[in-house]
Length: 233
Image 1 (cartoon, rainbow, N blue to C red):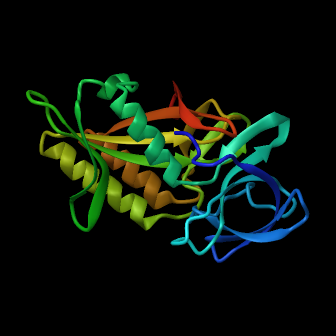
Image 2: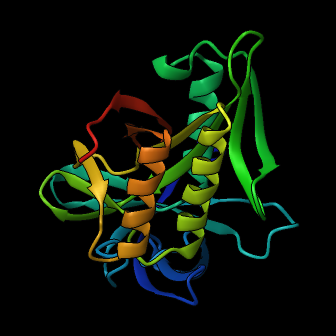
Image 3: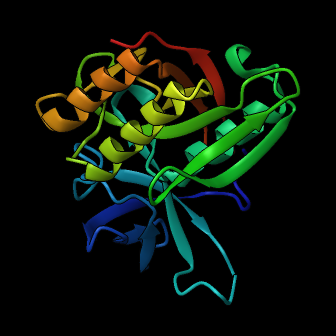
């Protein structure tokens, strides 16, 4: 996934109302950027943090900048745009880059299923069970090298797991795919202390046959692509 326009370096002034961020560009001007992330963004939204934003001239958008990346200590990057995860995984599925799912040639995004839910990708192929793939962007880091999900309690995430478990019980494949969108982590796990209900729902989902996959994202200021598979704690 390539960014549509070259990113600009900036400094975060503050993030507020979840989806808004005041920023200072390198020319000294201050702007408001869209923050496409409903989570808590622990460790990624401190005032003074160096960030990268994507400008746009789309008259349909209220804000001319979208916050995309955070610079981390040691030269690492994190992507705060949760929607980027679906675009990266969509491209990877189309390219057959995820071995567990490479046999599927029909890829249908955003399909309704379960109760009040949409699956990120429905994969179909004659002779194979349908595969329902739910994608989660992972950016929380509290231990060296470990990325965790979620960063805030998520009733919606637990509901998705229950729906995936129901899918697995019907004989279709149900897949939870974590995309770690920060380059300083080499493994991922569940933040059970933050959301015990989600952690319990994941245990139940796995027992019902839900498959859990995790991949790193390769990040730079021009693009985000699929990296290597990661272990899941």
